[in-house]
Length: 69
Image (cartoon, rainbow, N blue to C red):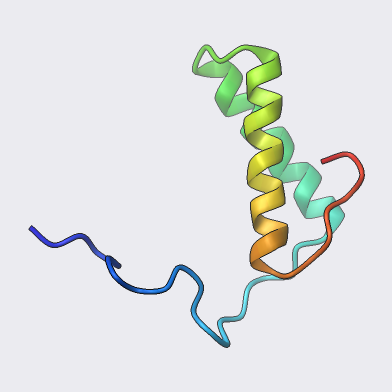
């Protein structure tokens, strides 16, 4: 069994991502929080996980983090 993408770099050079504005980040944060809370995750843990995903998206794009993350 072969894993798709195994052995390939996580970020491909030259790959273009959609613009990640603070407005989009906040909307994503809200959606992630709702998903985590619906799955039974505590509010503190949901916040931690959602912010980690936002920071990861910023890192992928070479952006600095917003103060609220």
